[in-house]
Image 1 (tube, rainbow, N blue to C red):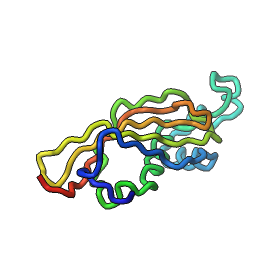
Image 2 (image 1 turned 90 degrees about the horizontal axis):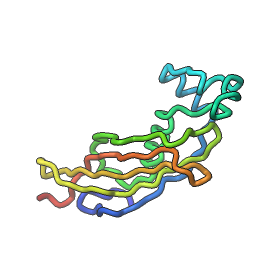
Image 3 (image 1 turned 135 degrees about the vertical axis):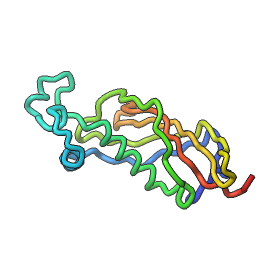
Image 4 (image 1 turned 180 degrees about the vertical axis):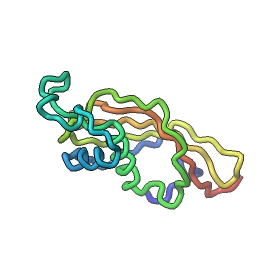
Amino acid sequence: MGGLGFDDAEIGMRFDTPRRTVTEADVVNFCGVSGDFHTLHTDAEAMRDSQFGERIAHGALVLSIVTGLRGRLGIFTDSLLAFAEIRRWRFVRPVLIGDTIYASNEIVELRPTSKADRGVMVQKVEVFNQHQEIVHEGEMVSILKRTVLA
C-alpha cells in the first residue's frame, strides 16, 4: 500500500499501526531529551501511592511512538509532504510502562489546497492499549502530494 497519494485516498479508509510496548528505556530516554523528570514518570515509590499506582509514560512520548508506528506502515511513502497540525488531542487514560499500544486511523476529511500539487488529509486517530481501551485520541492533519493535478 506504499505511496498512497491524495487522489488515491478516500474518506472512511482505515488502517491500524503495528503494536509496540512502551519500555523503561523509552521513558528514560524521553526524560533526557525533554528534560521532564517529573515524579509521575521517574519515581516508582512515590507513584505507588498515587491514583495510578505506578509510574506513567509521558503523553508526548506516546504521541511520538504513535507517529513513528504510523510512519512504519509506509502507506504515505513518497506522498507525505508535511504534518500540518494535531487537533483536539486528548489523553483519555494514562499509559503505563509495559503497556502495548497501537493506533487506529481513519481518513475523515480530504480537501484540495490553493496549490494544485497537494491536498489536505485529516485522520481521526485513536490510540489503544493491550486491553483495547482508548488511551489517546485526536486528529492529525497532513499535506499529501496530488497524483492527478487539478
